Length: 329
Ligand SMILES: NC(=O)c1ccc[n+]([C@@H]2O[C@H](COP(=O)([O-])OP(=O)(O)OC[C@H]3O[C@@H](n4cnc5c(N)ncnc54)[C@H](O)[C@@H]3O)[C@@H](O)[C@H]2O)c1
Image (cartoon, rainbow, N blue to C red; front, side):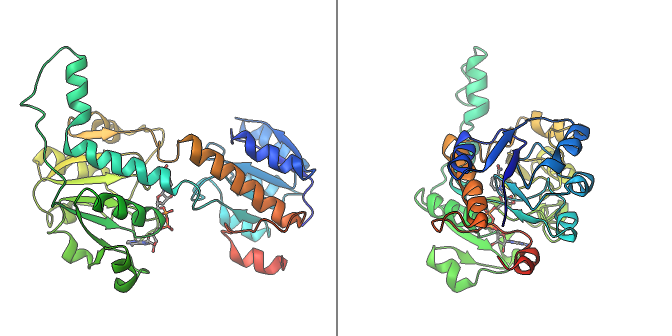
């Protein structure tokens, strides 16, 4: 594929630009362009690289007369209109594995933080109080962690939390019970999971089948005091239902890194974020030095691979496989 000019529209680690330039690909970095300006600039480029800030909408794609590739330095392509790109035979790439360890480690730290009331305890001490009794927690040892979605991140979470002595159960429609057993996860149906879980962590994509996966009906089937963690995508847990469950005590605590709207605007989302039993972080799952370098390098490698300027790299993050096959790359 002939790719000579790349626009980097979000602040991707410099290692991305360095690698592209090493292969004589011209790169311009223009961050936070207003939409009209992006539309004006996009015809000058063969490839566009974004993180999550730039929304690659149908009108941006329509303006990309010379656009051949849209690459997302990260997992998921929520900010890219893949349908519009596919209709124009524009290849969409992402870097699915690049931030899995970072998202997993944040999940594990949120689970441990919830168990020991680290955030409210620390805030209370900073405010000058010495509330030892108020923030007494519980051990994770012997508790049951349910993992919904046993892909890259879910599996890594299981392996780490087993080291804390947690029993790990899970559900994933495409991971067989036999495969789950290889990383010590007992594969169960959702109906079997709800009454057994002390903690539920979600690691699925946001798709129609997973929207509102955790809702009032589910809370009613869970143990009283179940704790919920979402480092996947906002919308998998119904925010209004979670708030109601926290207020009734049916849910004993939640840790949220992602929200239905980001940045949050909705009153319910803010009530959740400010809730005493909630630890909330501003979508920090992939925000580590290591993950940012990894995804930056991975997206650049895939673009270099498309140009066939190196045999060292491969195109591992194709989102619209039909386009890839059609282009016979
Ligand atoms: N917070 C962050 O910054 C951050 C960082 C990285 C990834 N993520 C998100 O984490 C999630 C998981 O990422 P991953 O890399 O592990 O993805 P993955 O594709 O490796 O795994 C996802 C798994 O979910 C399973 N799944 C699909 N539908 C399901 C359902 N209805 N019930 C149960 N499981 C279902 C799939 O079969 C798959 O095995 C994604 O939503 C991703 O966007 C968030």
